[in-house]
Length: 235
Image (tube, rainbow, N blue to C red):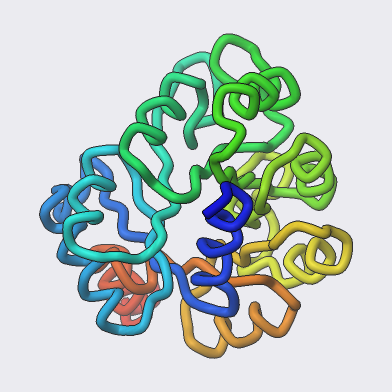
């Protein structure tokens, strides 16, 4: 099978479906590759068509549990940059070695570690890994257009609402999903703030290729807080 056929086979597996994000950061109770592997297995049994996962360690464990396409990333907080989703070539190298089908990178217009822009970084990444699928996590329409121009294979609305320029947006950002779906020739993934099946259905109605849901399914601490906050007495 050619590299193009392999890419199309991966994309066909997630088209029109639900990708479940199985991530737990170091300060969260479920932080464990073994737990994330079981979480991914539960998501697969529930009907997920793919998994989004953080760190090569989690990805390798999830691969033992499920045979779904994995969107891999590594979150790295740096003192000199607000970018934390797969910010350098070093993280890309490790994710490629782990074997995830798609690698997600921050493709916003913010400077990466060392002051690199995505315009400077991604050509290096693409040159080293010409056959790898890469997904651009973006926050604005312009960033989505730029990601396609740079040669990303997919664009996701992941970071809308999480950058300085978009922090006041209401999530899910259905308008951004719709605009990108109409403007881009590459697949658009709806992601960010999808809390209910109705919101998931509305996101798909914007014309996106697939959707990612994470917190609402796989982060019980945040889910519990949402319910508890709903019945807190007014002060």
